[in-house]
Image 1: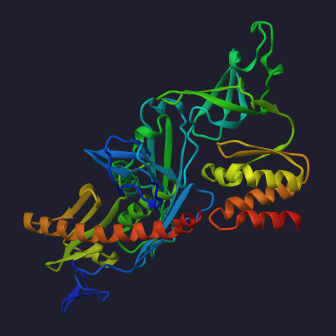
Image 2: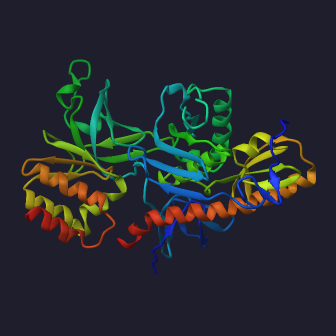
Image 3: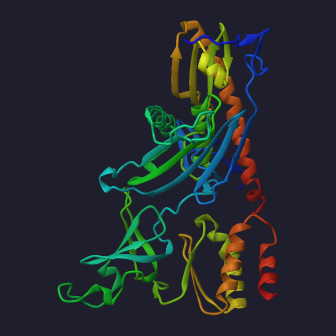
Length: 218
Length: 242
């Protein structure tokens, strides 16, 4: 059984009964919410999906980052979060690279945009990303926009319906990172941006897909 | 203690016509500062505080970073136009002290271990002052923190109580604050019943302190309900989405 309601920090949710908890804290057996969010209860876990806040990296997330700094054996990547991620050379390039002779900027230079995957997050927030993923790639040209991370699901839509619609109507190439960064290239870029920002602004309204379809056709 | 020119309590009513246990009109709203991650505006009668929260964000200088806990920084300031005579906007002894105590009142509720090496900045600005500014700032800050998605144990509600003309009153205004025999600011996490902040000026007996604490708890619970209502109303729309 699942139920949905809005909870606030400190709201009492229920007994834990050995379940996994996400964004909650326990006092004895009682579970309370930690953040403002939507409650999802099932037999396995008690989860609060936040309605606001910054992006916090999770292993397995596919994100869009920007190369911030080049190190001796890797790159620092800005991932639109309070923390920087590190992209080690071994996770980025397949061939052997002699770091004493090769300038790493020939692979990834500062301000390059990459679509990558988070592979490691430690307790004190040391984050590692990898390019060894099917979808991972360097994104050439294009522009990036930022939206609130928790509205990314809305931009993608059920089974990718919304993003497919925008791609189809505008002819743009679009990548959506789970950290709230969206990369757009080609086609009617302005229209795509307008559509995405409308979705972000009106994420709560019903019948958004139809509205966007109308907006893009008109 | 200064002597007031006029009596502060006449026929059981206070100078602004309130009963001793009556709170001024409270208004709360959130999300007014679009650049901030969370913001709130709270007014108690003529006292008005506006608070912006930024973060969690990367903390610099780097030596302040802790690997296991995050940091909360609070800056309280009064606008030059918030009082009758211009207030120098530079941080003075009073603002620095209030920044420190409100930070402690709020950080008791925040899970700082959830954002190690990062910082949450809270900017409290009083745009109109008429007594009890620090409690207005705490109420607004707790709302702003919640709307910024910061993990917290509970919302923090605060109120001021005091004693004028041998009567125990709640929610002091500017005049009462200046001429009170004693005043006390209390912040608490109402659903837990924990006090996070307590400051007292003047003289009170033990019984009076206990009595005032009881009154403060009642008022805090009322403010807490209002805070919850404000937050739920703001996000109610999003509930219908799914």
